[in-house]
Length: 165
Image (cartoon, rainbow, N blue to C red; front, side, top):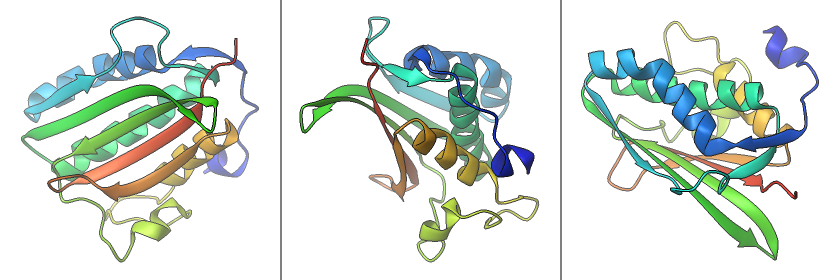
């Protein structure tokens, strides 16, 4: 609750989001294996291609929350797809991250509210996970959207300004 209500100030350093994703996946490796969840990565092969400015610890927490939500939603065999791309939006360098799974997806009637505090679809959830994730990305100049994944499941789209270094 305190992370949502009174987050600590973020650091502003270059962060390679591909490295953050790999670190989170390494931490979740045992749980992914246990639940027979495969991860399909589509990230640039060179380091530094997904460089953003911000706080590595905050970004780690946000990516962890997105992925653990997928693991919990699928609750068994499945696939999580993670795609990262550099692109330009109106001449502004940006980084796009897509996290999708083949679980049940976001309930259409709740999707818009899931970024609001204390709204949850889980029996034991607090409703703070996605609002914290949203706060982390928006505090770094980014945006987050919840969508239906192609072919079913959930898709979390994150857009962040690229590091201007």
